[in-house]
Length: 173
Image (tube, rainbow, N blue to C red):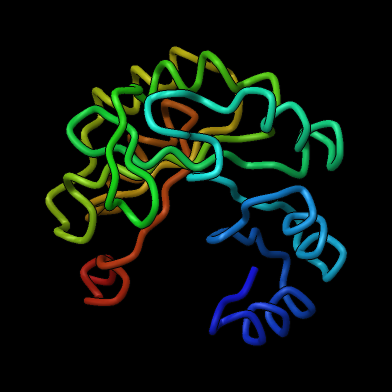
């Protein structure tokens, strides 16, 4: 993983229990982060080629690392999987990805691109649909704006990633 942030990530994972993602394209990449101290690795774009899920790659990751060390990222725009920095969109739906790959990971990290960064709320119907597809840990991001929303997600047994609402101090009001 040749990232400009690699040295920062290396320092963080030595100090804090972190999950690391972005640019993980192989079991070797993932193993490096785990060996350096990451608790889990997050893999996304490498799981999709065009309109095909790379189920064999997911199985190899799980075999090499253990399911409990792998989180699969599901980035979704208009109900379809987006990859490579959200620049490419496939015909695959988030539900199809969950159905095909849930045997090979510990959790799914779902980002709702359509609401990401705008603090207008995460679509709870999407959280419910995804939760109904799998009992794996589900973490969602994209527009979460209030403590009440976080509590509603928690009632669905869905974890929340909050960004802009923290940066703008909206959660503090």
